[in-house]
Image (cartoon, rainbow, N blue to C red; front, side, top):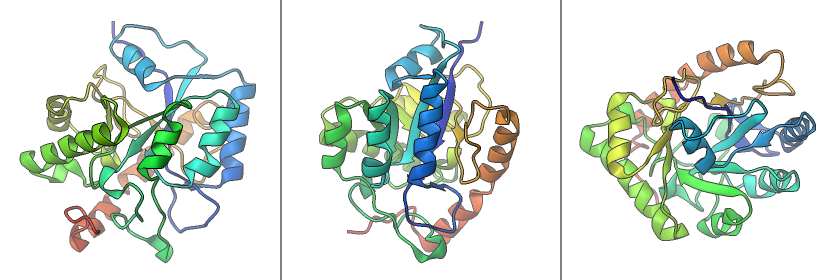
Length: 261
């Protein structure tokens, strides 16, 4: 029997500043999401618990959900992590390690705005307060467009960065743009990860390809759990496929291979 995994939400930016992209959620809306989850009796899972579910070592309960963040934006330390802590919720945050403490110059600045990422000191501060930090690669390239050696280096360097900075053995990776296939799963395993996370995909029983629901600006009041969850997933799948445009612009600008000092 295929192991079961819980519903998993994936947030990106939680910030007051507006932008033209679809991944930014206002702090007020995020707080309402968490308040509703808590009021409805949901319990959050840690990364270790998610890994156990994916490997079939424990069954996910009907009221269990996981909250994740891709990119590790600085706004989380003010607008997201304290809200989670207030409700006793755990979360996993995936870090673009070469940009820790820097502006998101790896990304396309839709509308001209740049957003800062969490610094390592911020991550250390929240490690013991319910937040687990894992890999989102070193510079956020679309791994499926890279050579074997290039993709392997991205995965390994990110894991090494996390180990050095946070004094923990990183076990999870979130594939940028959710772009991944069997090659990426194998490379991630070779780099030392034992769980991997995708976006808007279907669960196949592979612990290196755990699906999550991206939460976009149009998310309903109860993302992933309300009566519109099936429609929400279908729309999120289409929106995530459109992210290939961002990757194409990145490639043209050379942002996937350079790290600014």
